[in-house]
Amino acid sequence: MLQTPTPPVTTSSSIIWTDTIRQSQFNTWLARVAPAQHLQIATLRPASADASFRRYFRIDSAAKSFIIMDAPPDKEDSAPFVRIAGLLSSAGLLVPQILDWQAEQGFMLLSDLGAKTMLDVLDKQAGYEHTSSTVSSNLPLYDQALDALVAWQLTSKLGVLPPYDEALLRRELQLFPDWYIAKHCGIILDARQQAILDKAFDIIVANNLASPSVFVHRDYMPRNLMAPYPELLKNAAPAQKLGVLDFQDAVYGPITYDIASLMRDAFLSWEEDFVLDVTIRYWQKAKAAGLPLLDEWLDDFGAFYKAVEWMGLQRHLKILGIFARLTLRDGKPKYLADTPRFIAYVRNTCNRYTPLKPLLRLVDEIEAAHQS
Image (cartoon, rainbow, N blue to C red; front, side, top):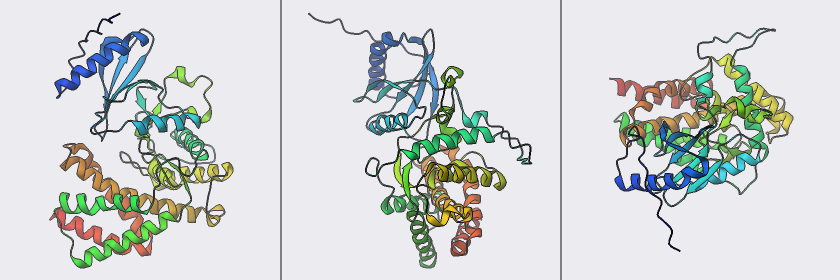
């Protein structure tokens, strides 16, 4: 018997399509999946976009909302998202459920964790006031983030995720001279400057590779953690108090990476007292959980904190390059506005450790030349 073709649907005019063929494919896919979840096509609207080529829509049924991922397969591979969502869910974390995936065309229907991120609900104006009886109003949220992180790291296994090895660390660091220094600042390093940068990269990579390895989210920060809808919090375990997103680039690498990412955020900065407090809490939770830590870290938080700072430095340099690339190659200039934050992170870390002082002077030279 011949089946009647699924009729196309008309989607919201607030969704902009530059490719009419892809728009038609989306409409056909949405018409197919809508009946099973009782989706109300007229409620389709933009939800968010990120620094990649992915974008997200929200759509309602009579009872709840859902998220749709639009990930063009020629630009974004959704298979890692699907696989790592399974790993995180198995670890007991709250992640979107994948309800339908059209792999060939890159459309995905997901459960909706919430409309607000951790970044949205943080009290960004609260000063850090720590006395014997009070703590920052933001500490409970960060404790929840730490609980989820430790639960994820406890399930780590070698060979499951791509290695965060020397080759990858160096490719990421190279974004800084290629995109930030050369293309954004318009500066070509001379032989002396290049030698300083090369030596700095060598010691940064060596320090970071000395850390034990676990599963690494690789962008673990408040903008990628969700404040779940209240109904999702019923009987939730500690690791499920915040939802986790944007995990498709996860790797197996230094245990210091995600705590550095969490506390040296791309979109807000905290006083060091608060950074120290939360990092100590992570260190204590990691020890109690039996996560792999160097012997020298077990009784010396300062040694652990140094490792976190050196890992953070690698991330800061990488992000400076990524934000420049997003502006110059991808036409997304809003990210470049946050580069002063990362220059400040770089300066603070380099100023603290003698082997990094030459890199500090080089960064100051570059910034001075760029501003002149």
